[in-house]
Image (cartoon, rainbow, N blue to C red; front, side):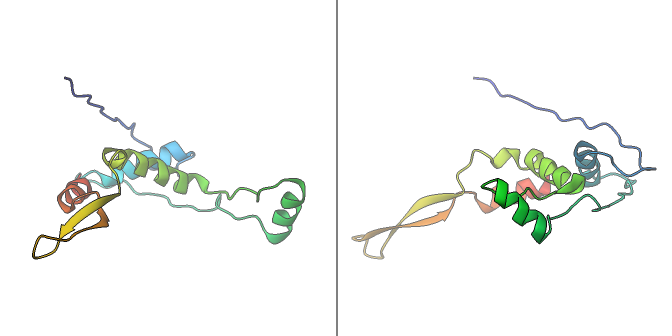
Length: 128
């Protein structure tokens, strides 16, 4: 009977330059999510994001059985990493569950699908 506590600490990113990696972008997003008096200035750049053009896709498909990877870039990868940390409390919860309903007379019982996460849990998660 123990409770596992995980504390995440992010190093401060120098705001005079743009983040160089997905980890630095994740750190800056985490800093932006904190309620503080001063807000770090994010230097958003999507110059490393891209989808291969048609010719690149065709050449890649000719040699491999899958399309070439999309370049998500450091900000989108940082966002995915940040969301993975922020949404960790709900990873193990089922998204959809079977819900039983009874008719007014109580004789007929029906089952349907419903959301597995209650509204109060969502509000607590958003409020973090």
